[in-house]
Structures are given as C-alpha cells and as structure tokens.
Image 1: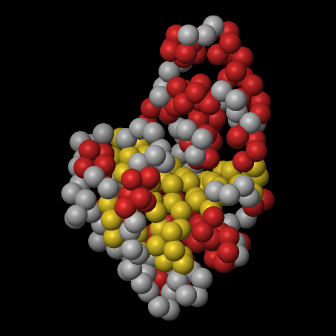
Image 2: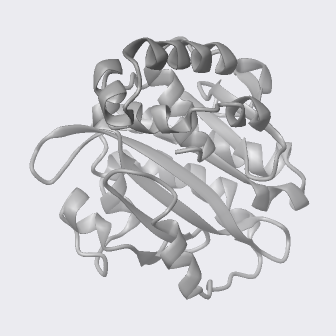
Length: 263
C-alpha cells in the first residue's frame, strides 16, 4: 500500500472496523446491481465495500473505461491511489468526519437513510487530470449498529468545472434534513460548519430537464435549441432555479441536483 494512504485507512479503521464485533459478507441482490446504473449520469463505476475487511465485494465494469482497472482486481487502495497525492490528507479528514456523522450524529435507525457526497481531483490511467464525485450510502449494519457494507458510486464530473474544497454534503434519502457543504477540516461533523437544505427545496425545481442539460455542459442557447423553447425562457428558468435552491451559479446548482439524486 502507498504509505500516503495510511491516514485514510486509519480513519476507516477507527470509524468502522474497530466498532464491528461480528463481521459478515453482503449478499448482493441482482436488482441492486441493475439499479445502481440509474444513480448518476455520465461515466461512472460503483462498488460494494466491506468496512471490516476493507475489501470490495463487487466492482462494476465501468471501472475499466474510467480508470483502466480490472473489476476483479480492483482494491480500495488502488482506487484511492488515483487521487492526487496532495489531496489525500483532505480525503482522510473527510472520511473521519463522515464516520463521525454516521456514528455519533445519527441514530442507528437513521444510518441506512443517508448518503454522503464529496469531490476530489484525480489522475486517470491515461495521465489526465480529472474531477471525481463520490457518493456513498450504507447498505447494512453490523449487530452493534455500525455500518458494515457501503455502496459507493464514483462519477467523473470534469465537464462541470467544480472547485474542490474540504467540504462534505450529507443527504437524506427519505425526506429528512440535508447538510450541504459542511467543512471537514476538523475531522468531525459539525452542522454549524455548513448549511442545512431540505429535499423540498430541490424538489421544487419544475424544470429538471434544464438542469440535466446543464449537467451535460450545454449553455443556455444550446438548451433552448434542444428543448425547442425560447432562449429567454431558459434563462428565466435557470435564474428561478438558482433562487429556489440558493445556489450562487449553475455549477453549484448542477452539483446540488446530482447530490440530491434529481439528475
């Protein structure tokens, strides 16, 4: 293992492995594998990780095109090693804050109803510097209530031109509170270091198809042509969406929509 990755694995060990008394293996339903492909647009791969062994019990074929890896031989440290070396300490802080959120902030009943999202720059097998968005949600809990298996979805979002930082977003998948862009600089979860948003805000977007086209990198004129509507109509809808979601720009809007699972 690359020595630089040790802090990340230490965060996982403290947050999950050391808390699990009786480990188990996840039985992967065929439906889960099929449905995971609907989670995100663009080029992506997904995996099922065991937080006790740090093994990947399943990796989707998408990892071949995105990272040039054999799904059968892909490991967590190989995936982490694709991140730029200088952001590994920040990833370790994020993972520590995430485990703190799930273990301390949430109740056992709530843990299977949240996902966490963050981004980081990486370099693919072609040597190209790219941007990755990672979404992770617990799949099962151990007997003592600790996350045992996780579903991870990694999506290339280079075309969005995101700016990476030390924040993590936490989203409820059943209508609960969401916490957007919470700083992980201290390695713990503090809701006061981000802003709370609710699913109702995101779901108030009446023109999701515009957000979907923004996610593909189209500008207002191209969206107007694609949807066969007036240019000014597109601009008005986009401004309304920014106002409803309190996003500063289209990049933040698209990122919010992706994180919430709207597009």
